[in-house]
Image 1 (tube, rainbow, N blue to C red):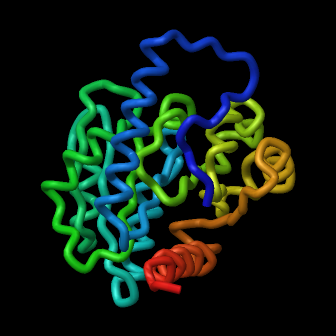
Image 2 (cartoon, rainbow, N blue to C red):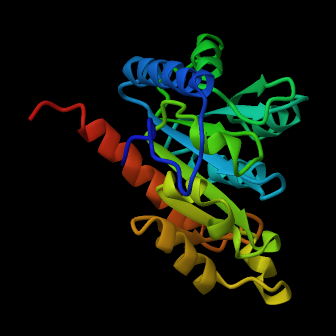
Length: 234
């Protein structure tokens, strides 16, 4: 796991003092979130709109309900539809309505924690706003950032949006059941993602058909156990 705060941007990027101050304040709140949730694994899931994040989390909740206690914070510019979908399958979920903002900021997460029952929760998943640009700059106090890329989006995204892949520990290639029908190469996207971030892991999955879901759930369970083990005094 690597820190998200103050990560260098890829390429030549100019930031004014206002932007830098905003990110410093965000990093301060992100640290406060980590301090507030010492025993809960926090995973920030990012993607473009329509990648299948919500369906993925619904299926994840169904599979892990007897093994992990999962809670979800869902970010969208408007409506509570995704949080309702979570609750429909028994997942403890709360919607964050950003009011048009293209990302979630740490302050939104910190405030939302007061309204979400985290008693006994093992893993808190943040479903970020669908966007591969803005969310990459904002640490939300997560332990891991996961990027979901659908086979229907094209395999050129790691080079186009490098910061998102640079700051992610895991890439999930979703909608694998459509791979025979779309011009998408898992090998090419893996190569490009690892050219940006040599340490990124890659799992190919289909939430609807079940392919790769065991590997994804095992990844989550492993990270939960690692987080709990980190609290045990040496």
